[in-house]
Image (cartoon, rainbow, N blue to C red; front, top):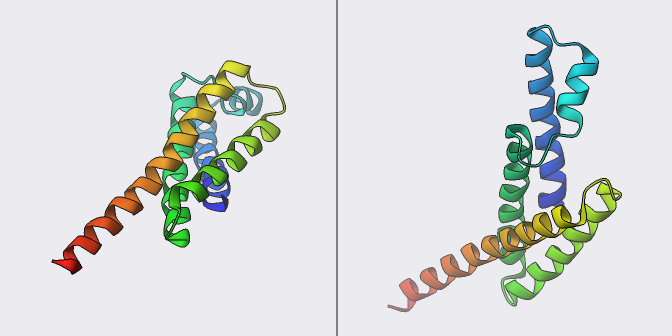
Amino acid sequence: FLVDVVGTIITSIIIGAAISFYLASTGMSAAQISAEIGNPELTSPLGLLFNAVGLLYSVLGGYICARIANHNEYRYTVIIGIISIMTGLILAQSKVPVTTHIVLGALTFFSLLAGAYIHVSYRTKRQRRYQA
């Protein structure tokens, strides 16, 4: 959970700061920069970048969750997925439309499961190699 949420937040802050410095160097005012970065549209390049970063951290979080559990990986990853989605709902504070919550929640959930799948498939391949 911490890898998913905290990693996403920290990386988004770093990306936002870098973009802010770039935009400031082009002569944009602080108000314009705040408007540009503060709440990007979901389908804007910046919105897609922030969401891609979040989904990559979700994959990594799912992988680490499965690796730590090392049994019932999908069960624990589903629990982490529910916690992550609920945290996203709380952090958004109804500023985002319900359909956006549903889409991003589903993407987060499947990204976490993809991370767990990567661990499980790697572990299975490794076990087959040692049994042969």
